[in-house]
Length: 373
Image (cartoon, rainbow, N blue to C red; front, side):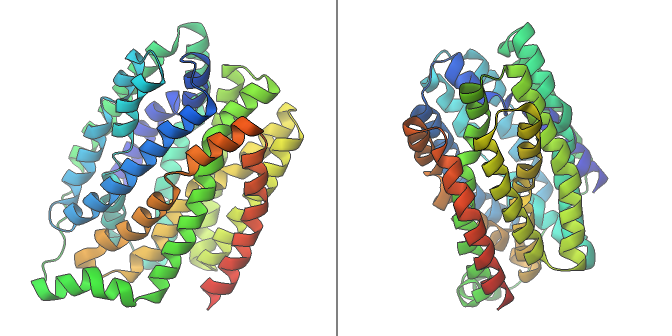
């Protein structure tokens, strides 16, 4: 687990150098409008949905370590492609590869299989916190470098960290799924899924939640830049604040999920997000924005909490496929969300955030009612 944590931290630092500034870069440098930015993120989400399904099947047939490595290999060209893009369409090949989430189900299945179930939520959130720790300084660093030497250098540096993250995974142990009879394997993959009402409930709930998150989250940096006139460096600092908070909040949510209830962790995250959106649309003061970005940081643990709920339900022999199903449903349900968010943003920048602010408490109530049952 230490090596996976290290990989997450290294890779996240490289990713954070440009990912948080990417919508701003697309708009300011490449001249993309909010709808075009939404299209790019929608394409990424669609590819993520497709590759999650592929990854789940591969990880239940072959060495999960190799599938995780393949996920990082697919990402290696992404920052290089971004560095040569001259318009928003030039970013499309990079966004397609950026959507290759091959490591998601295989990585989760790897962790669930090797972790004490009584500490599963905490373990998953700590590993996610590795991402957050990597992101703590990288958005501010990326913003500073973008302002001083340009985004091309930022993209080149991100490639270096992607390569280091890929290499670090070669040192983890291999893990192959337990072999089962073909008939039992087929039933585990399909019939049990249809019959498992709890898994279907989780999948539908998180599909709605990911739609809302994907609708507003890509436009937060752009909103701060467009509406409040913040510089790239300030946007980067706010991004660093977000992920520093996510590391701490993620671990706290993990402890809450293991000691009390995973449902309570989800509900708390939803309420925090609603308050964050309210603050965001009301004030451009740096302190208020920092508070908003701290509260929204819990949203980056959504997939982790979902994995903690779904992972223990699955037989080990087809765990990656089971984990992939709600992830795939969530991504398919949300792949048009950035486009919807971009359209709403073009009409009035506050609209995506107001809708999210209203939707989150409703989803919290739904979680309390249905997950309790």
